[in-house]
Amino acid sequence: MTRVLVVDDEPQIVRALVINLKARAYEVDSAPDGATALRLAADRHPDVVVLDLGLPDMDGVDVIRGLRGWSRVPILVLSARHSSDEKVQALDAGADDYVTKPFGMDELLARLRAAVRRAEPTGGGEDDLVETDGFTVDLAAKKVNRGGKDVRLTPTEWHLLEVLVHNAGRLVSQKQLLQEVWGPSYGTETNYLRVYMAQLRRKLEADPSHPRHFITEPGMGYRFEK
Amino acid sequence: MTRVLVVDDEPQIVRALVINLKARAYEVDSAPDGATALRLAADRHPDVVVLDLGLPDMDGVDVIRGLRGWSRVPILVLSARHSSDEKVQALDAGADDYVTKPFGMDELLARLRAAVRRAEPTGGGEDDLVETDGFTVDLAAKKVNRGGKDVRLTPTEWHLLEVLVHNAGRLVSQKQLLQEVWGPSYGTETNYLRVYMAQLRRKLEADPSHPRHFITEPGMGYRFEK
DNA sequence: CCGTCGCGTCAGGGTTGCGTCAAGGACGGC
DNA sequence: GCCGTCCTTGACGCAACCCTGACGCGACGG
Image 1: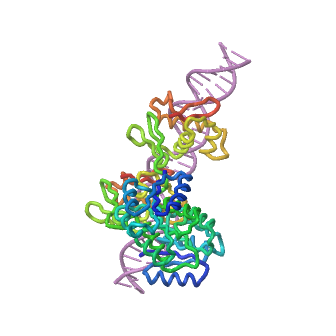
Image 2: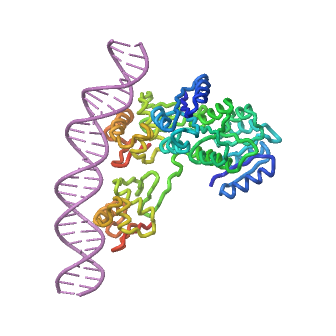
Image 3: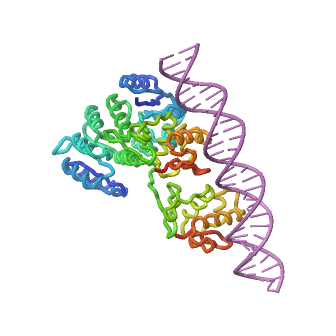
């Protein structure tokens, strides 16, 4: 199910959006200000964010920057400001779309669908697989196959694997891993990484004590190698 | 360079777009109708398409479908129709954004940037390699390859190498190296440099006692030469 | 010729970081 | 209310890394 985070300080707008979204089988969280929005985004990892720029506690553009610091979630900006300058600023800060109030609900929902569709790596029949000699990762189906059998991963394990595979061959810093998997307020809890890397290796490596695909770069981060 | 395909049957709009895009270092193709657009898209593989819905030969939505049949290139729709229904149709057919005429050039360009940015795979920059006759440095992946095998570097070694490669060909003073690698409170501990330069040379130079890439400038600093 | 200075090399020791295991606690399903 | 799964947290051993001091060498100048 697609999860949406609605950020707006006007209750009637939030209510209208929530009703319409839930009627279309979206899962919805809502936040009345920027601070709550950033916290919820970190906690719940929405698939798309609908963000009003006129918030009581902080500038909407700063919310965009705050999100973009660690996440690539699609952001659909909602604003009463029609000025071209406002739009350019928001879009260049990392927003994906900009809708001016008053807006048509049909249009907004269509733009939302477009944003979500775009973010899904493969919309059609094709899966994009990442294969190693020991196992195969299907990013689209969210499945891992090893020796003909599917491997069960917990949500956190999968999320970690996703980030690593997405950056295959590249070093991913501990901070980046922590922020992408656990949220932007994390960055030093390297023990989490140690525990979960061990889990992944136990489930996926042929010889977990001598990993060949999940490489540790001491003091820097981890690297996934095919 | 980013390649844009502009599809519109009104010459003055095409001209305005082409001028503005070329001034911003985009590479631009243009098509006056849907058939030409589909052909050009297939031939030239643009990074983004700007598409007017009101074309002489076919419905704009069909052009979107034609593109989406084989490509995930971002499509930015341009249209004189303000009706919500038109927008929903275009977006659901696979368009990424919808701008109504008359449009502000600044806004359009911002939306274009957003569309292109989104389409970029991950961090943005692919791998930028620095090659010498003896080894290759991949700054993005944080990898060094020598003779087909990856060389393991410690964090401090990496940091030092990074600063030197970044200033390839230039002399870097000891003070600058110390401050960039060890922090601003360092500046006189040249023995650190001696030790770590030796490590780098031992791991990367063909003949560590006669370095050809990591050059010492006595009393001043060090220099990295390809 | 000798002293000084800067650089390269080496080896030891303190410290940090990593892997592992296990226990406690939150959450959801039955 | 019970049970299983998953996430968090702490403790411990071990390996790797970073710092440090000592020594030798060559260049330079007195």
